[in-house]
Length: 473
Image 1 (cartoon, rainbow, N blue to C red):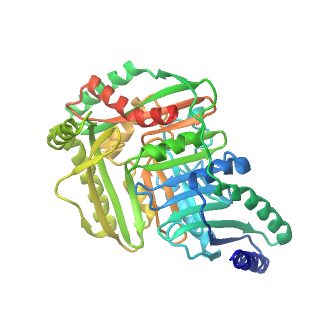
Image 2: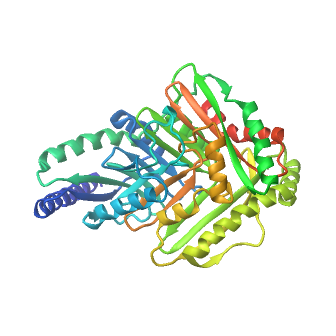
Image 3: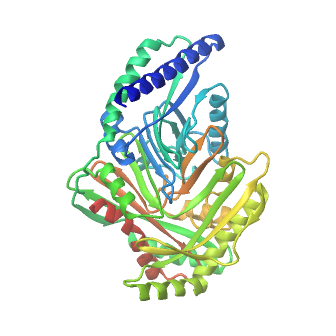
């Protein structure tokens, strides 16, 4: 059995080397770089351990993404291609990434049969508002920044897979490249070992201008009373200082273990790690099928089952929260009707219960029309009224002028896109940015005419809890 496994491994390596050799010949013939991507089955690799161990190889170049069902988990290591749009704003940042990605895929040599999330996959995200004045807090996190990893571990319904992505130039030294890939692979093989994650560092917290944030709610409600806005989302920041550096690996493991039914993500850029556990899908594409979730209106979880059920029922019938939720449903349904066919949406919301919070929840599905892509839907939907407000343009302008916070990637699309055009993006809420011993956590609330500043402030405190608990792990 051991000899048979060794033989199979050698055959796989030979097939991979043949793919590299073929790619090198194609690069020479075309006189341009060629993307080569090959996928092989991997046994017993743990994604959290892989993320942790990969820090020994390429710290600052790691990405983690898990859907809310844990059906697809992606861990990317290294940067083979970088799709950074620093100067392209507005709608052009989405189309620019898509155009460049399609150009690389068109001539790529791709060998994969592992199903969703395998083969060449770009992973990353976008800023909330490319027109907002930038601060040093978000250095490295550009208005659009998606990475094709050199190594991608994928867990899906078919098993565990490792995809290797390399770009071969006409002058490529294949023997040297093979040697380098073997060295890197031997380091990554340690991911088969289970990692013990250290406990979090003690920290102190500082709220950023809480009184000013409450005052901005009053400004917003007056604009709503004048009928200039119907809803606007206001975010605030909590700053943490640790006794030692915060651990992306330990924080990620804690979120993964304690935030079921949430999207888990961690995106490194240099010494920063943007990390979180979001309850909200923006859009998913499977073939022509499109899916989105409307998540808006929330309350805390109860101390016991009876209280929890009572709070849920109160939320389902609370007019303020229902109105807030309806804005989101109307906007997402309108976008789906413009870009897809056979749109389906339930008549009433249900409850989406998380560890600390429960939300009003309505799913939306449709079938993409010709010319509708995943990133065109991301552009169409972002930001939903759950993250920006309504009407779209007026609320975004108001946030840009009144909110003291540079949201960066907070409340923005985070996700992945494969060579077939399939993929998924969530909304990066319940999140924080870690940088050494400093961390910034973010939370926001939808403000409508009936909003009370003190109640909105308390609600944001619930929304900080997932990240605070993960950092205390």
